Image 1: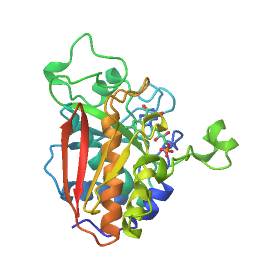
Image 2: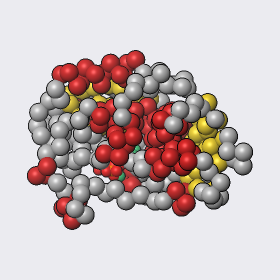
Image 3: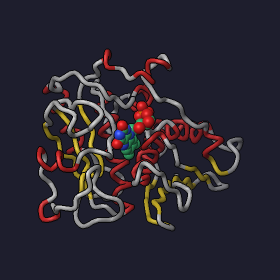
Image 4: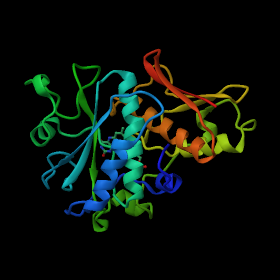
Length: 277
Ligand SMILES: Cc1cc2nc3c(=O)[nH]c(=O)nc-3n(C[C@H](O)[C@H](O)[C@H](O)COP(=O)(O)O)c2cc1C
């Protein structure tokens, strides 16, 4: 069973934060987050590890902002299904942290050299031709930090200009369900529409929102994946984002009291999440 917190509000208020106060997360919140992640049982098997680590307060790790003292890394193998599961499991950590008042930012283009210095994890895969940003392009040997996230408190005066102009602190532009769904929304139940609404609010690399939804005619099987052959020029691992979106959908169903059988597989070179209700 998933702990009863206000998951819907966490989804609605979460924003990528890129400006932090240089202080540690309070111990009580940090302990709660660690315990939640250690005890959390997913409804599918996985091998994702979350490592909490301390960073130096400079721009080396994230390049565009100073690292707050506390941070976390999502570690797994690099095949398509594993990285997509990172999205699902990692998003539960991000949303749980949000609920505790901790700000976060999914981050794929961290400095690998700096991460290895402050959180050694590459072992024998630490070679001289490591990529500069992120863990690599395709499938590589061994486990990697697929993404990392700062954990801290938003420093408001550091708001980015783009966010100030929009009057809120967000790049919160999202596509409508009708643009993402194969078929019409008319036949869908209010519960499915609710879960799809939470899904479309998921964060994605460069806010590309490349997920697409398919609902079977009997409304019993829902799948979430990106279009076959989808590529983004800036973000090399879009299947991570599909896992994040699937996590929001799963939470939406749960919040409406609907249990689902969840599976994810690789089909035509991308991850396909399937929910049977
Ligand atoms: C898997 C993933 C990787 C991301 N990597 C980066 C990154 O390397 N650098 C960055 O500034 N933002 C990164 N982001 C944040 C996105 O730009 C952000 O989620 C998106 O613009 C939507 O904004 P929001 O999170 O405030 O809703 C990443 C997001 C996701 C989901």
